Image 1 (cartoon, rainbow, N blue to C red):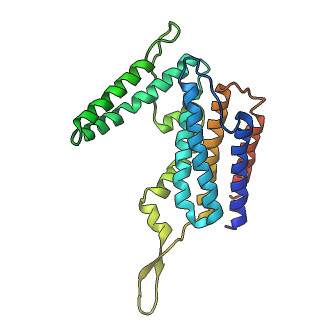
Image 2: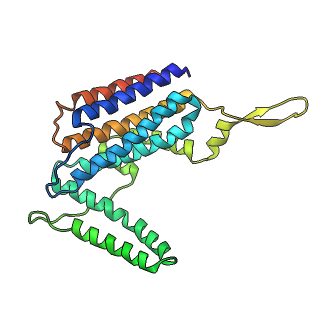
Image 3: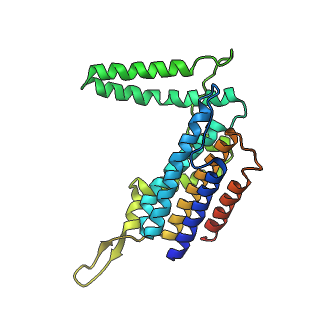
Length: 261
């Protein structure tokens, strides 16, 4: 694929990021009014933007960096779906319930970490568990006389179904294949080889369909930025009208990605 095409896509993705920056400011501000979710999702958007910037840099450096860019794209897609799922409910209590469920889903991870620490430093393990317990207790407290009902964090696929983007889940699976070192990785880096000295063998290098790889990468990354920035912006107080440039920037990127077919 011509490098100019990659540069054009990188520029369009950069414009999408810039549209969010113009809307919310270089460092978005969110007042805390009792609900942690609305002060948490913008932080997750910042993580997604970093992944997107890395995709741009890799694309502009060499089309051969597709597997590395795929890792960033997958992260942008995963966290983008999480942000949109957390921010989707209009009711603040429902959003906070999802936020609480999201943190509870991390509980098992931290407990396992504490167990590992226990073999090296029992005191540190105990402190980690106490901090976790304290944080969850605070997050579970009623707000303004109303209880917060935790909503269990679903799988990525179920989140995308809930958001109406189930059709994009196949793109996520493609990204997983690009970075997990599965059998498909072999076909991307190995090709049959024959010579007088080697009647049958293989040569190794990069033999993947870069055009298809980068199409999925930019589609997934753009979706992660677009969907997370939009939902987070709504909860920051911006209406659909003010988000118009953000939505249009995403549409322009989608159109360019479509031209690679």
